[in-house]
Length: 325
Image (cartoon, rainbow, N blue to C red):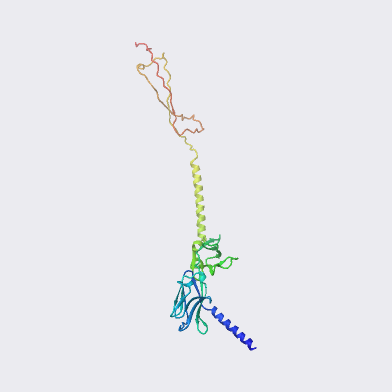
């Protein structure tokens, strides 16, 4: 019975120690940067060996009157004797693990424990927003640049939520993607413990509220259309009226060149007529407008007509009239 109680006490002690080591500080470090591991309660190193170890099995440095650094860590670590802190430089993901500060006395005593997690910086993201046909219902896609990873969300002017069926919003090792509304912006945030990237869109640029027509606007528009229609009808009737034929017929003067009749050689000419040599005769002829005018209106050409006729010279004769008494 006493043996059972002893074994139970030992197992309980180991459990408490394990829980204590798990609750020690975790340090997140961006890849390529440095981290300083400290000892909370520095110790006096007289006649004592002091170690910094990686995962309890790999010695990094040993101090016993003088400092000794393992070849693997040459140029990558710096040890400070006065407080036993250790500076790790240019960390890579392979440096992720637990680091222990150990004092060797009658037995090993751990005086500091740190869990170091090295993470790469996250990639940039691209946010695209598609508006539905009604209201401010938006479909938002957040895509990780240079990656096939993308997440879909549904948003309005106030909140965003993952689309049904979307898995955990994780893009890689401990990195997450989240979309939310803040201060008038839809924001896509891609982050881990050491870095973050964002893309954002203004809500008013993609979700402008639709104007609602008022009764005054509708009435004014209707009246304007009605007035326009009446004006078109009036112009149409006036235009047709102007095209009706007029009752008054225009008189257009036409110039006619008439051919005079030949003078009979036997005809007695007036005295002095033989000396004259007429070359042409002009007569102005107008349309007859007397009572005998036809009742039918004849549309005359809008331009005057010109008729040309050849005029022949009268033949000369030697016939003279009877001598005067």
